[in-house]
Length: 138
Ligand SMILES: [Zn+2]
Image (tube, rainbow, N blue to C red):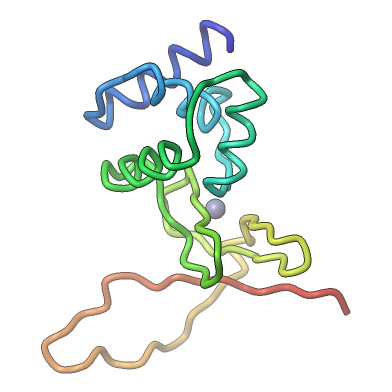
């Protein structure tokens, strides 16, 4: 935990209108303290927090991640399964899901071309399209 990463985390929270509580700063620092985007699960963030000596419970991690999503600074990656995956990059982009490893990474967006989508049902519009490409070993 360096002063720089703590500053970055605090700024990230206050820019999103979130009160920078000690627990939030500790978790935000693990998410964005180095200025890089990352994909995490509540479980993986909880493990990282424990290693850093932060006193948080898994439930707190879950609730905090939900609060970050609600504030629009984190997005949940829609994958079914027992775990929720989150991304600090909130811009639309496709993902690879590495089924063997249970890992998510960004897929090259410039290589994705969607030619046609089904028309939205009457009275509806398409709000977003999520692309998750599932990978398995050949
Ligand atoms: Zn991503």
